[in-house]
Image (spheres, one colour):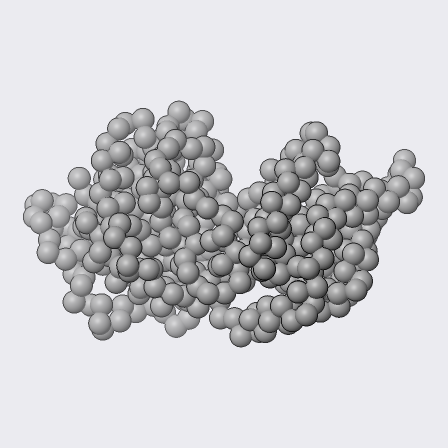
Length: 410
């Protein structure tokens, strides 16, 4: 069996170099590594200190034609002629590895770190013909910023190995026959969402998807809150939207409100006003997202009603409101006057002019009431926490990173 690894970079050389350095902790190594340099500027180059750890492209050919064991994995840096984006870079890179003769490909983003035995154990599971794809639900690493602490407190990954319907694209392990039968990602032309597409496709073809979370991978990139919640809207927002369309907005938001209540109670126990802010950002962004898609009535009326009610609720918290407005603007949900970016020319024929706005404002008030039940958290935000978060954002470097905790034994 010829195992190749494919990874990707777009101006993430430090994260990529750390990934390559982390391979020495794995209990099994790929025969070859393909790095897809997706229009980095400057172009990615393997640093001098890592060069002794890797061979050249001849390593793959030798393994393929003679079966000879290589002391070092081979490595090739491939730079497409144009910027591809996440989904098409994966399609290009995985296809390239299989075309080069790989039987199995490990596709891994440069900000993901694998436990020592993850690859070895996953390869054993992949021997089962019904298993089409193996991945992991990465837990968040220890960055020391507000969002990372929040995610580690609330977004727990259930330990274990289990069948699933969806595998995020941060790490995939798959065989050539599965890629060939699915025709890869050739039917997917979006910039992102390749994981939704490929998971659904393999489900339809009857393959099992396995989440190996014993232990899970680790995602080490530090994210801005606005970036993280934009991703949440892409992957969870559409599901909430579907429930809202089919069962009504109240049913769609019931579980969200319950989760927010639980998290805010925990934030109060921990005396973490910053966690309350992140809940506020998530709830506000979700409400605007839903309003803009017509599930609270005409968007031209519903969206301003949502933002107006948020403004009302935060009337006595100017610093918190200022921070929220800047994050929502970064998410392209509002403009710099805290007005919704939803189009203003929607057809409202047949509707009472002010009804959608009234209903949207009430929905917003009812959901955000969970925040006002914790005045100590809100006063803590206004007393200085919001300014601290805003300062953290001002000095943020997108690819600021940190090493996997090397004290882990797995």
